[in-house]
Length: 113
Length: 115
Image 1 (cartoon, rainbow over the protein chains, first blue to last red):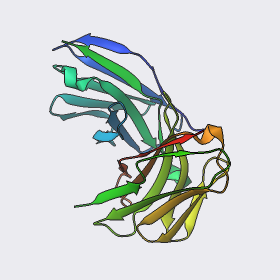
Image 2: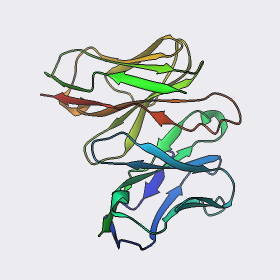
Image 3: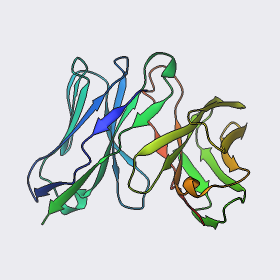
Image 4: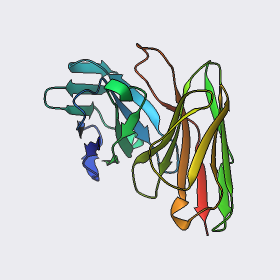
């Protein structure tokens, strides 16, 4: 069973701090990795994707990928109360499952004003 | 630009009744299409995916079925709903192609409550 694991949280950080969200995956052949944000009662929206080892920055967000350790993380700099949401890690399976993207259960983030 | 619509947005159905959720994608052709379910307080569970008309792959054995009668239309159905079918159902699409990265884009979701 291919899995994506996340700490369910909640993770609470003060406004302006860095929030660090982590994710591990079991399918070593996975090629594509995504972070989504989901507000309560809404559908998930894409924050960013990463395909290669290392860091990828987009505004206040930085995704980090380490395929050897099967680990993906998301850093949110200068956290704002509007960042309070559930963050979902997603992985597209490799090999014959190249069309299948599976999700972790999500980490709830609270940013305190 | 591409858009995805699904309906109805909310529905309350009695146990044993049928279900039909519909989804359409606009602005792209030959997309991969998906149905996910999210139970209360839980993660997204992949139910079905389709890489083309009439091609459906089922991920979880259950009393649900999916069909793709047209290139950009995806339908989720059930003949008899169970209480455990309650949840937030999400239709999604991604581009085909080796370099697409399979980024998933979601519709607005459908809240199903089985009573």
